[in-house]
Image (cartoon, rainbow, N blue to C red; front, side, top):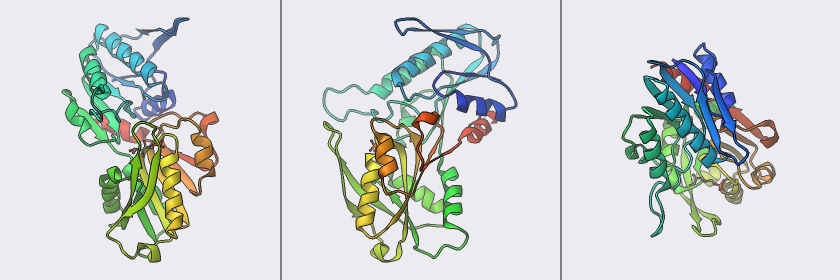
Length: 308
Ligand code: R5P
């Protein structure tokens, strides 16, 4: 098996290759002065199973074009199969028509990937569990929740008092994720915040809690907020503030994809969350990091899947 990397998340691709006891195979990516990319596979791949690791944030459009070209180049060079590891699948929030007249951008991306010859896709924590149904080729939908569960066990220690710590989804869309995590943590109690987002301005309002735990304000001392991604950080900031109003002073945040956009750094560093854990599905170079941030790696999970 030969492993190639696009330019969006080379640190993760290198870790995956190391886990597979190999090195990244050489790939030339040349950028023309006007921004066009030229991709060339300089290794022999005839009849080889190949893997290309490419995340799609930041710069989703450039990253996708690069990925299309890499898959095409591998196929034209005679690769037996191409598995695309796209740990963060950009455009996943545009998976259906929200308002009349919109494109279904994710479908366009998937159709293009399939038409250039991708044989299989490995990805993480999709925004909606219906997304795999949009693919005609096999898709492996992995989750960082097991990594989060291990970290949460470390945080709460060995003998937590029942009800001390609760899981929180910052919106109703995340409730399925929270239920799975709750099961991994011996049925840890959970609640969900009700979040409304204005589709035109993007402004959010988080001012209600959906729960069948009438007692949570009295018993809970610590909240573990879990989301699929953090972009501007406003969802998390609003959730932490609402929990403080409910009397829960400590919040620790877990999110799979550090999409990190706009002034996320100020928003998150100044939020009252005590720690923010994300994964390396998207590369976070040194200059984008901040004090409270900790990054967990999904590389072992990817390597394990590739060995199957
Ligand atoms: C939305 O439904 C997602 O699950 C995230 O909550 C959202 O994308 C986070 O965005 P932001 O950090 O900009 O509030």
